[in-house]
Image (cartoon, rainbow, N blue to C red; front, top):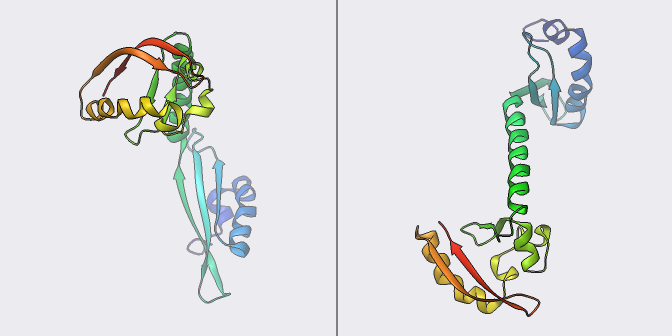
Length: 178
């Protein structure tokens, strides 16, 4: 009850029967997090709710506390970002240029298909790995000063022979951009 009024009468019978199993679970098993999508004022917000028992003693349940957050916008933003990432992948995979994004921790956050193929790998094998795990050790040691410059805000352009992991070599131009 909420101030002496049943939850069912506050949120309505249909909604009550949707959330009741989660509330019962919280009462008996502890905190439960769930998502619900109810119509409110002609809109259908997506709510992430956490229900937890309110206990007076070790086994004495005085009720349930529910905290709810509207995650509708977060969900829409995530979907929009996923679409943007798909478009970025399509564009970068359509160019022969070796494109990558390496964070300040020197871990690959993104690489194009051409970049992965140049190093005889796949995106899944490269993204999430440290730079020293992907490029040959000698090359990694040689580019450390360029990385330091780039992370301090200066662009560096190089042209030279580049050894691949398969032992081959190619003449390439690469740019470290902050």
